[in-house]
Length: 479
Image (cartoon, rainbow, N blue to C red; front, side, top):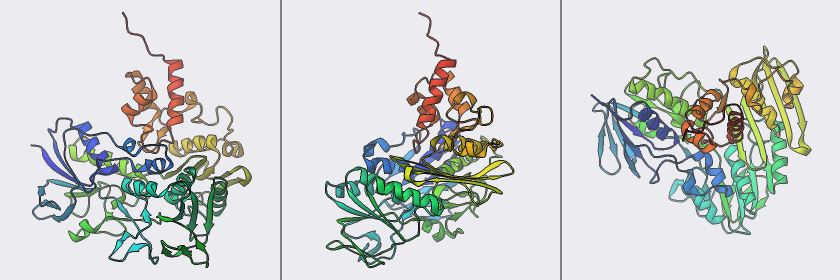
């Protein structure tokens, strides 16, 4: 008998979970899927929001593929869980019984307690002239404000704030980025890297002000800051962090902290209720990375379809990529965790690198303006292979042949090397797809999902495609 699985949330992780279930159970013989999505839109790729903001994609192009064989209810929010009766109550008055419940409710953008940013009647609603940066509706509001000659202040210098500022500057908008911390992206970068990033953004037209917090917003006068300055702005974009959507779980008596607490089976304290992605809190899951949510989706799909009853989520090795035209930045692992450290800085040319190793293995790195080094070092980090003896050459992207397996040379890349971190696609998976008939980049992406996340791996996928075309050219069918 088919098990009734209800999924609350139709974002990137919820959509990936139902896709993984249908890959294992295409005819619904084992699992019947019902999905409740609070947004009126079908699922889309939030990772691409900054590209939409920069003008590189139309909003419709961020849509994720439809999944057949599910009962999808868009624009319908879950309002309550009855764990005793195993029923989900929805805002449209419907009820949805379940055998297994999956919470993929994600996060909501946070409005900091700054005078004037929130609507007077609702603390969670932005005031006039203020936009959050979390979903496609936010993007469209920001684009409406980003007219020629507009002046926009971005509050928050984390990853999303930097991406938003760069995207708006690329549209010719006068952008001022204010960040209360002493350097940008402090969760991923040290002060040196943050300073180089700020210099690069200034070179692209962004007025970066670190150590400056927003104090008050008035659409008539602009944004007042805590250093006494005033930014003449027509609009404010807030990218000051997120909070997990845990209210539904907490109201149902499930344990929550910064997220909904789950174990290695992605189960809550109620074994029939599971949580995935940004709303879930697992000891091995770094916050804010879609890769961890997608890896969790694979594990839970294995478990709930019975494909692999031993499947467990053991954590995700964090790699952060900044998606901003003209800036190449990667941060991985913990650059402070090594017993050996190398550091180079060339701020005038926008280059900076920190490499941390422990017992000859890469444990952390920050790499800006060093794409060859980023490819090689990320490959070593993923594989756990020993680093080459010439550490400086590695940090500069010039490791000697035979000592490393750079992603820039697909022939020397190990088959187990992860090409697309967002989707956990290895070189071997791309080779298998090629041999199955996927002979161009779009076909490889459709077959494996490589380059459908943040898109930063597309050049590597192109390189592997070219390499395969040379060593294993497609065979023409006989006439």
